[in-house]
Image 1 (cartoon, rainbow, N blue to C red):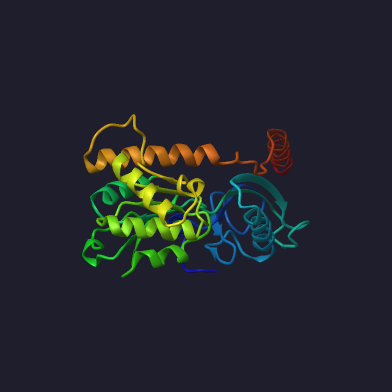
Image 2: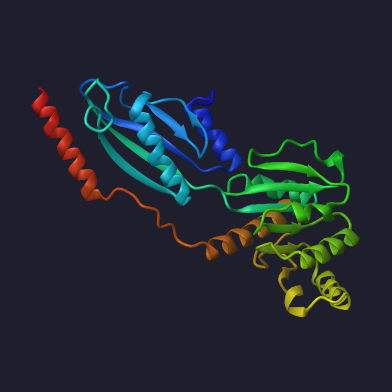
Length: 286
């Protein structure tokens, strides 16, 4: 068991984008190792806090890791008679809610740590994504970033592309058009990304498309790099206005391509049955 308590563990998992399960005791009858409201957090390889230890906790950790293996958001309600199912001598009954939260799969790489990037990360801080801010100017990497964002210094930012996770979303807005072009060439030579976009005018975009074609890249591949980036309906040239336009476009594309969540959960019929059984048990115990 790790040293963080359950609330700190949730924050840690959210910041790192890791999948996790919250186990909460929502009802107890008779003698139980922990009271209602007790919580623990379970990840694929670590547990935080405790709901009583012993076989009860062992069984719930197993169940939680089965949910984690599905990497889906879901909720399950589980009733456990401690003597019969968990072989614990206290002999009471507990009902536990397991809430599973999938790992963050939306990985965004921002090439360029300038004004638009600084505005954009303030918006991305509130979205379900993990963000890399990549630049070759360490003096721009002193402003604190939101919890789901971090800096990565590269003397040659094009070298960062090979280190990106598969299906990353890549945004280019560096201070140097030559670097922008080099990044586009490297992206087209390593097409593991899910989305690529570059800031700039229509004139810049057309010039880059011609130069990339002259460099031997197919037109169909070049068209995969979206430029200019951002929703044209969102007007304005201030850094935050540009950032709003980019963020709105990214969010629209991300959710358009997301498959609906189909994680399992306890049906209302199961929950109702559990609640009725608990009520009967409480009456019998009075």
